[in-house]
Length: 142
Image (tube, rainbow, N blue to C red; front, top):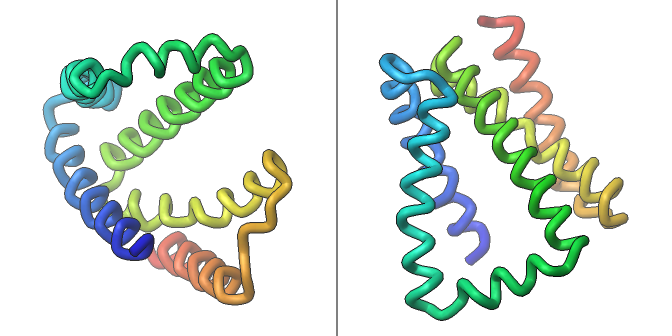
């Protein structure tokens, strides 16, 4: 089932990138990020209250390690979002998405460095080789 969830997310990211490319014709990357984040906030605050999970979530943030990781993760997310939106605005949604598709390579590296887990197999390494080949083809062919 995890495969279908990931594929569904990939399809949604694909349409999201094209929508963002259209938005970037009239808005800056910072404006798009701010407005999309506002929509997320407007949806999830009531949802957390309705489900009774808002207070428990805040209690989890009293753990300094959890809070620090959440803050660092937020900075990483915001930085990545600005970079991909700027890339989409400077090229197009498809090219930006192809290059961004190299993130599994970095995921494997950071999984090992940050949590000491080897999260790859022979097949995932083969997949990464194809990703790198694709990056080279796009870089030199464009």
